[in-house]
Amino acid sequence: MFKLVALDVDGTLLNDKYQITERTVRVVRGVVETGARIILCTGRSPISLNAIQHKLGIKEPCIVHNGSAILSSDGEVIRAVDYSMQELLLMINFCRKENIHFNACTVNEIYVESEGYEEQYRKYFLKPNRINDLLSLNEPIVKFSIYAKESDIERFLKQDWNTSEMLSIVRAGKTFVDIMMKGVSKGNALLHLAESLNYKSKDIVAIGDQHNDIEMLRCAGLGIAMGNAPEEVARVADWKTDTNNEDGVAKALVRLFELK
Image (tube, rainbow, N blue to C red; front, top):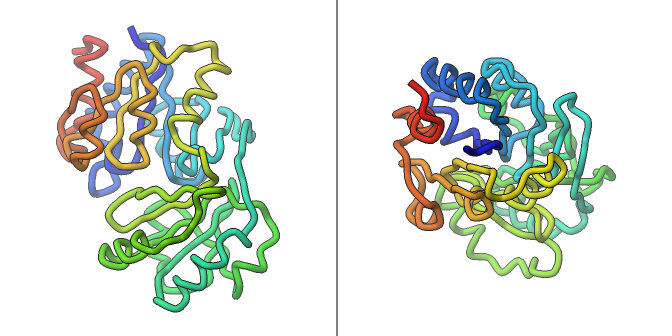
């Protein structure tokens, strides 16, 4: 029986309306009753998880910003991997020139230069801090994100950023790209957290749907891809469940934990 269940949030735990179905809530609570621990592993900021954890009835550590930070069940920072805004000079100048929206995250705060995206952030329970020049920000950054239409994301990814020594770029969705320190991933953070809790890889099941979930699916004893996952994500998983709009997480957990 698996002891640690690592769940991605958007496109996995939540449906396309950013909701958790009552069936999923019931099943997750059933898993908790078996003694397994539910760990949310997301690209989101910690504040975005409060309502989700409350609805699921869980109080556990969480992995945020795609593995750049791990927080305790009380919200204390266990681990954070950060870098300086100056590492992003070329990317920020490109985004400014091409009118592409971007933000920079510390563990608990998010900063933007441009206005007009308030509704998008509201979906994630976020209220960004607006400043005129992100490059003037002196706080350590754990994640830099690009939010744009799909064609602009493709154009951004085709640029030669020469980040191999310092930063890694990962696609977090059709319209999202995240930039973290080299070596940062949900998978590495999950293994770090599991070791601190005295669990091994074989004790972990992970469920996700996007490219930023690949390392998490690989490192778990069992990796499950959502039915809505791109083919390159599904290929690294051990098996596939239904989509996030078809209670794919609930169906997978019922099968694994033999729940009714």
